[in-house]
Each structure stands twice: as C-alpha cells, then as structure tokens.
Amino acid sequence: RPAEIRPAEIRPAEIRPYLEKKTVLIIGGTGYGKSFIANQLVGRDVFESNDLSGSVTQSCTRASGDDLELGAEFKVVDTIGLFQKSNTKPPPPPVYDILKGFTSLVDKGVHAIVVVLPGGRCQEDSLNTLEAIETFFGPNVWAHSIVVYNKESRTPSEIWRDTQVKRLAQFMDKWKCQGADLCSVRDARDGGPGRTLASDVLELKRSILRRRGLYTPEMFHQARKDLQKMMEQAMRDMEPKYLVALADLTGLWRSDWPAAMERLNKELQGAETSMQEYNDKRAEYLENQAHHCNRVNQVAVFSALSGTGL
Image 1 (cartoon, rainbow, N blue to C red):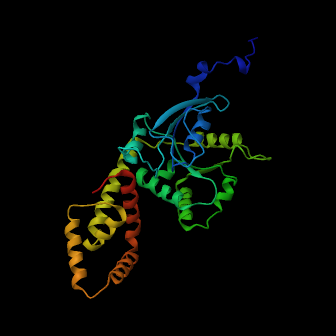
Image 2 (image 1 turned 90 degrees about the horizontal axis):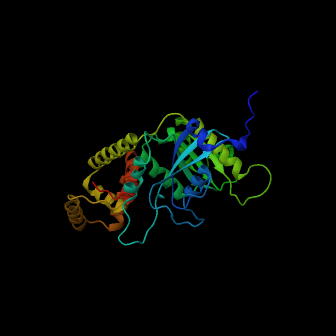
Image 3 (image 1 turned 180 degrees about the vertical axis):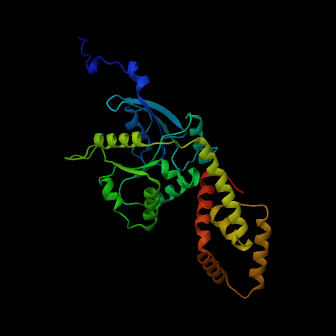
C-alpha cells in the first residue's frame, strides 16, 4: 500500500508545473488600492501601497504567487495610476508611455484585466477612470475584465442594483453585455460576521480562474490606432471655430489653429455681439452636436493622459 502523503509534505516546487497559470493586469485610478489588490492575489506584500490618495506605483511591475488550494499560479502586473499628479522635475512620461510597458511583461496576453474602483458611491473621478480605460484599451475591454470595488461593504448584487448614476448605469450595461464580472473586497479593518477579506479575495481568484480568452498586446496597440483615426475624423467633422473651443477644452494644438483663432477674433471684432453671446452660441452648438460629445470627451481624456497631440 502506498504511503499516505500529507499536505505539509507537498513541496510547491514539485507541483508548480501542474498549476493552472493565470496572468492578471491590474488597472485603476490613483489611490484606488490597485497595489493592495495585487498583493492579495500573490499572497504577500510585494507591491508598494499605502492608504493615501497619491500614487505609489510609478511603472509597470510584475510578481507571481501560488495558491495550492486552488491549484493556480497568479502572475500579476501592477500598473501606474490613471490621473496621477506629479510635481517632479522633469515631469514623468505620459501615462500611456508607462502603461504600455505591461506588453513587455506578459507573454501572449492577460487572462483577466482587474479594474479597481474605490468603494462607496460612484464619484466623478471613477467615471473618468472608466472612460480612460476604454480609451486606452478599446471599447471591448470589458469582455476581458473583472471590476473590483475595493474597501466596499456592499455585495456585488447590491452594486449591480445601484443604477442611480446614469453614466455608471451605462457602463454597467456594457459590463453585462460583454460578460464582465463584478467583485467587491471589504476593508480588512471591518469586523462582524459574514464576508471577510479572505473570502472576498478567494471569490476574486475564482472569478479570474473562470475567465477564458486573452487580451493581447496587439489588441492594446490596435486600440491606440483606432482612437487616433477616430480623433482625426472628429477634427475633420468640426468647423474651425469650434476646433478652437475644443483646443481650449483639451489643451491640444495644431499648426492650423492659430489661423483659425485669428479668423475667429476678426469675426468677434466685426460683429455686434458680446463675448457672452458668443459663448452662449458656442454652448448651443456643442449641445446640438450630440453625436460629437463622446468624441470630444475621448479626445480630452486621451490628451490629458497620453500627452499626444494631433
């Protein structure tokens, strides 16, 4: 009769080749707790994190951790926070240039993109972060995503029912249509019966193991190309005077815009209209051009994060 093998006698190095391997990309806004979630997945404090609102991670970093009970190895890539502010001189590279570094840290792609949001009611910066993620990774990114509410007391089912914020409800519709998962991870300091941090992390790991398919570096690069084409088309669709308004919104600049501004100034000087009346007309135009609104928003987000003009 073969000798019984006890769990304590199993060496991780011996079974590691047989573990199911999952590569995970962690993304989210600055101070949302991405590195905290990454540490939970690998099972130890590898990624630097804190409870402050500033960004600690300044580049894409990678670490691995085994979960023998689940029979899995998680390869986790932590990323820089979106919309981070920095006073360093010289200023850091644009977020896009840092974010694309993940493509060199994965082999064929990632099995799951874990999108970390802060717990509590949805705020404007969280919605802007979701817009930025679509901008960088493409509109079909949610087919590969798990949305994680960090330090959240509500259960996933309770979050799904929270449709009071229209923009968030629109994102939730995309998550459902594309098959994204939603998890919540409670604060480790919260006591009481029921859910625990460990049980929430276990559910997140199981959700990762259920993911099929890969988000590849080629998809990331193609999303960049598609966005540039979209922005160029948006520029062509707009009248010159409203390109000036868009430049004011986004900080973008084109060589032909100074001429457009000069024409606009002459128009204002020669017309019997006040600046307030002009601004009202401009606002009315932008409101009537509803089909441009999403494009303008994407241009603004892309410009702010990538530092790339047209």
